[in-house]
Amino acid sequence: MSTTSGVATRAIKALAILTLVVGTIVLCGATVLFVMLSGDVGYDKPVTAAGWLEEIAEAASARSSASAILSVTLIVVCAIIAIAAWRRSVDWLAAGLVCGVLLSGSLVLVAWGDDNVHRLTEMAASAIGNTAAILPPGGTTPAPDPLTVTQARDEITRMLHATIEASTRPLRTPEDVPVTVHQTPVSAVPCGEVGSRLTVDLAFRTGDNAASATRILAAWDRAGYMPDRAMQEDIRYSTELPIERMSIRDSTSVDGMLHLRLETACAVEATR
Image (cartoon, rainbow, N blue to C red):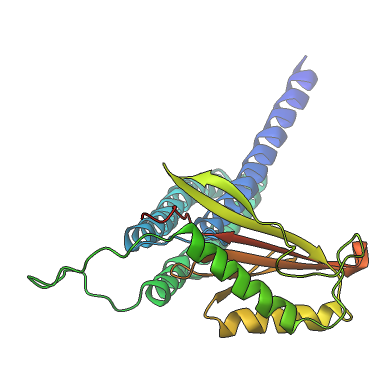
């Protein structure tokens, strides 16, 4: 009976030590990943100062919470190490030291690693500019006129012309039809209470897809659109121009095509 009891005790001890080490690894990995992702806005960037402040506050809160969790856990592990050293338990002492090293390293990464708060602050400053927080008395600026459907269509026409001009001839659709601006379909989806968002989805091949994609992006840069990058596609966007987002993806190795998508800001019918 005593032998069986000793085996059970060792099994429970081994399971407890394994739980401590694995739990520490999971906690460290999840905490570091949480902090890294807290400042990732991707291409869904805020368009207002309040939105940027909210993102910065969330990133700062995530870093502070992660540091607190890791610090408290490290204190608990230090207590385990002290008790193990006092009781001369080699197994618990080794497990505690491993967990302490993992927690300390994670705490260093969270506290002094990639500073998402600083990066978001720089992005916000670049997007918003050095505008005054409070307007001077009597300095109110009238709200800009809303974007009209006509203005949105005109910008789509202008940028489709620029896209076609930047591409290597010939330009053909998957149906082997020449690409022209006026034959490119434009769709409209509702947005807001009375607005419409115009979209274009265009697949086409050129004489040199890679070179065409590079020149197309350069044409959008010259037109005042800002660059971004998502998985397997390049993006151009604007918070002021009629087209809110353009993405282009080179899938030559899959179907031989460039895939272009445009989305305008929410537009309304012009009032007479």
